[in-house]
Length: 323
Image 1: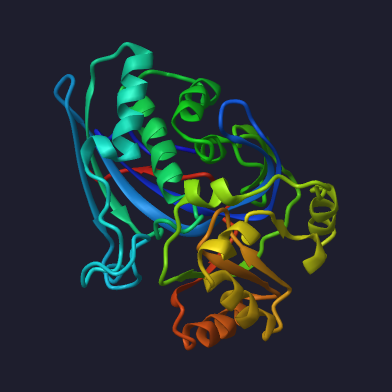
Image 2: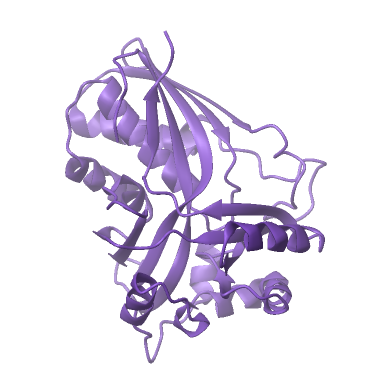
């Protein structure tokens, strides 16, 4: 990640993620689950703007990007004409919590103003909140002149959420993919991984991650991640290598995943499955052209939001704002 100049305002575009593989190995004593997952950053971005404030202050404004508001039913069911859950405000937002935790851990008293424009759907298994928190740690570290390493920031990140360290990891050239283990905080970035084209659907129902994990049972015969990684390196995509152990638990809560699986099975995409704890579902295509056609086809079925995305080579795109 490069900062282009020393402007007092920083702008960060921070990506969503997809889980190409997600195995649940065990329930941990701390209440989390031991997992092994292959995650990739994708070209669907939230945008955050950061600037310095007087000591000790935090200001956070949040809004959905234009065109994102009228989309889906809340995770809590029909509620208002707005179809996204209201964005968490101030201390309820993980971005605010990231600022507080970094301020406490570093012993600084710097202030910060943050403007967050959301494009990554919430309650979707796309990691938008985690990505925003990671971007906040990176930007505050730079803006406040702390000089912390990524390893130091990752320690703070792991205290805030299991997916956040993924978005802090250095990316190998070629693709933003990494194997994540433990509860997600142990990161192994991968080299030589190919770019992939995805069609991502965020249906009209959101799901609660804790509710999904509560229904999930660890694998009795765990699948191995190595065959998928080796096949991807050879440019081969075999549907049988893709796993998401949470899909079965999600189907107990909502029928939407089974409906999406059937819809994608009627297409010629290479592989398809749910991302994270849902409710987003994705298919992998041979080319941008095929992805564009498939996106139009799925969009016509009326499931909700549909995106054509590719693997993103960097954890964040960070630049200095114009003076």
